[in-house]
Length: 108
Image 1 (cartoon, rainbow, N blue to C red):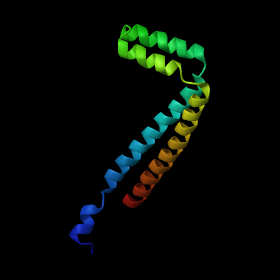
Image 2: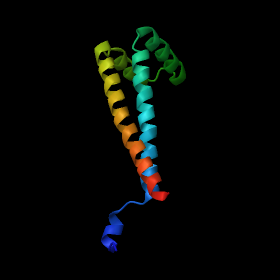
Image 3: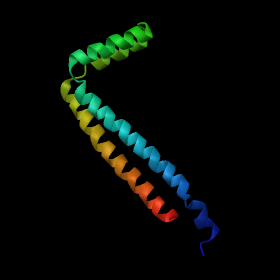
Image 4: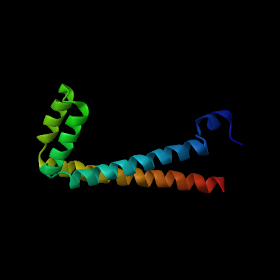
């Protein structure tokens, strides 16, 4: 029979499922970011997004500064960020699926 110290350090099944779901959601968001980076690395799309943000925020100085820095990013850097996003997304999706499956198996 486990003692109180072992039970205190063992997370509950529902906690692990919540962590797994969080990892799944984060993985999907990062995958979408990677797709967006590959699809939108064309300067024309960047201009459309820039115009949309400028209209929405009314040309605030912080937004203008951020857009200027983002528009100067090289294509190679965008591609590297996309690859990193895909790799980290895959890692999070594997972890999330593993946590959810492991704990679903325990509760049945």
